[in-house]
Length: 249
Image 1 (cartoon, helix red, strand yellow):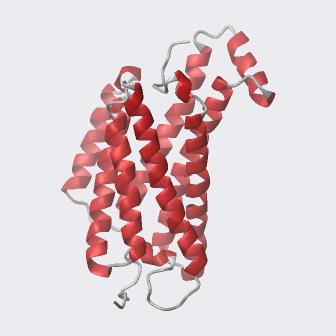
Image 2 (image 1 turned 120 degrees about the vertical axis):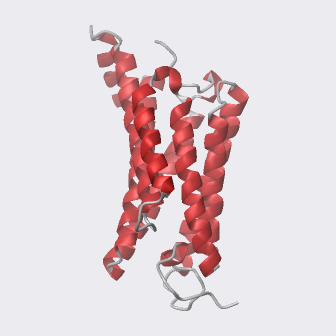
Image 3 (image 1 turned 30 degrees about the vertical axis):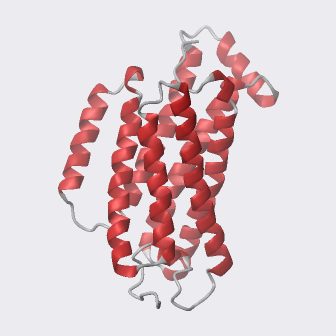
């Protein structure tokens, strides 16, 4: 089978752990946002939940695809054998491409929803983004894997810019943590662009893991202090500009 991922052989399996950990963190954050929407009826929470939920599903798609292709145990053995023994041309490659198409598509959709969340009117960045997606759809292919990471990087930079503007207004700790997590994730995408070198792929994966650890810290912080009613920036609503109430120093 043609190698269509850049994971070093000795790193196989460890990347699945990172993606599964990411899925757990993202789905919890998504549930918290949607639950907050049900309580406050603020549609920003709903969109935030959808954004993180789509990225969570993207990670799950990657996990399932890699489990089928990496391991010959349990249900994955039957699926893998069915794929390999079929007479369809390049069926394994087709399965692999399909799985990672959904992973990339859902990730970019989720990031775009999060980027658009606090914006009511289109800006120059929006028109640039639309143009970039048009060009991307025209030239993307298996030989241009880096375009996915570059697209993710651009979206994350735009998201960081949005939340930095929010942070300048509210100075909430949760907003700052979210900015740091997104910044680490953006750095990982930048390094992934150069990930033809095994060491850089592993480094990017490690930084990506750190970004989700940061997000997990935010989730734990919200779960622990989220019911407090004082303006201390603990609740999930303090991860954005969903309140006019400022923190008291």
